[in-house]
Each structure stands twice: as C-alpha cells, then as structure tokens.
Length: 83
Image 1 (tube, one colour):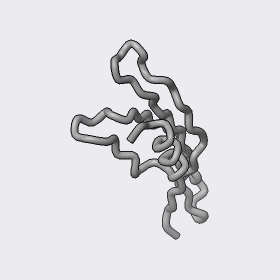
Image 2: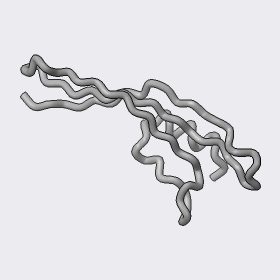
Image 3: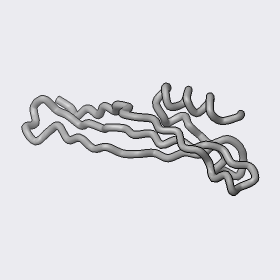
Image 4: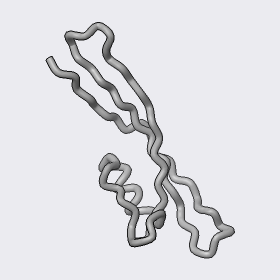
C-alpha cells in the first residue's frame, strides 16, 4: 500500500495589523496538522503541525495568493481583507 498524506485545519487566528502603518490590515495565522500513514507500516503514522502566516499585501504585484489554504481559511481571508 502507498503512503497517504492528509491535512487537517486546526485553527485560524486573525490578528490586527500594525496600526502605526498608514495602510494596515489584519493578518491570518493558519494552523494545520499533516499526517502521513500506511496501514502496512508499523512506524507510521507520522504527524506534524505547521503554521502559515499570511497578510493581504505581502506581494508587490497584487493580492496575496491564498489558494493553498483550506477553503474555510480562504473564506475568512476574503471577509477580513478589503479586496
């Protein structure tokens, strides 16, 4: 059997931007859990957590790419950022 990877959304946090800046906006902190498993391998599963931090205008040429985030995190980003 092959190793499979599953990713689970644990938490989405919204933080206010730096109000000392002229054009500040909130940013997201997305917490994910990745699990690699193979039912035939006794050393698996392996679980790793990770955090992705995104702000709206981190990129010089337009919007921040959020397509790699889970759908719920994308929905929250669209609500808090003024696109």
